[in-house]
Amino acid sequence: MFHNILAHIPTERLARAAVDGAISLAIKMGAHLDAVAIGYETATISLAVDGGAAVASIFEVEREEALERAEAALRVFDAVARHANISYTMRAVSASPAQARSIVCAGARLHDLTIIGQPEPNHTSYDNVIPQEVLFQAGGPVLFMPYTFRGTFAARRIGICWDGSRLAARALRDAMPLLRMADALTVITAVTGSAWTLPEASTDHLMRHLARLGLPARLASIPASRSEVQPTIVSLAADESLDLLVMGGYGHSRLQETLLGGVTRDMLRSMTVPVLMSH
Image 1 (cartoon, one colour):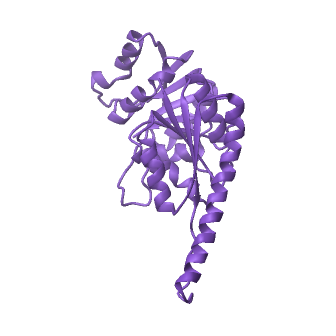
Image 2 (tube, helix red, strand yellow):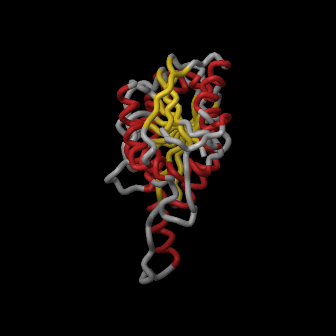
Image 3 (cartoon, helix red, strand yellow):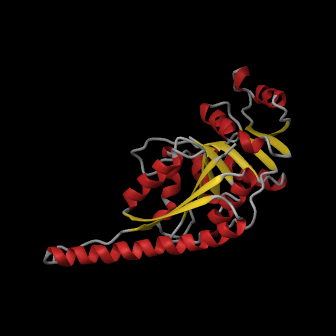
């Protein structure tokens, strides 16, 4: 079970997706929920500024405004959480973008699950950078809520994206509390033609494993072309009325601007249902 959940509440874009998803899951799991909101300090000081007192004053104003943004975001969370009668705490912080990343990632490592909003396209904010940082640094599962999400999160029908890899297996294990509560499971796999797969990594082996756990699943295959995988998964999720997708979070060189694997990056950009990822 997820006993302790962390929710990152954005401060520079709409918070409702993260708020609704986190609180409804906490209710379902009977979990304690910690919410953190960070106002970003981004002021730059001109070299023309003369005197330490003036510099300190500018930074102090920036910190106060950043903290107010965080507190405003948490007021939205607090109103819903109090009505839901759940166990929760809140923390408003002002920090630089680099500090914000460290704060959220460090907090995520001590929770069973982290809930965070999908990066929002066409919206410039460090709230859009935090999600992928948490995915790679949390050391545990991250549940991404689409920025369009509203209402109650209920994972009754779950799709499990499977390629036999370590990351897919990690996501499967991390999602087990939700899988055990689901009404229907669908194993989603790419068609690889004549490529040979280890029997232990096959979908057949996975489905037998799930059946032994009392979790029967059906199989859905999708084209193997890399460019088609993510949109086909999204289309399948709609056709199957899936409430949640479970998948590994793939990454490449940490020195590159694009840290995410193709399917992972595309899913974060255009998810239509909540997605649980593990790295």
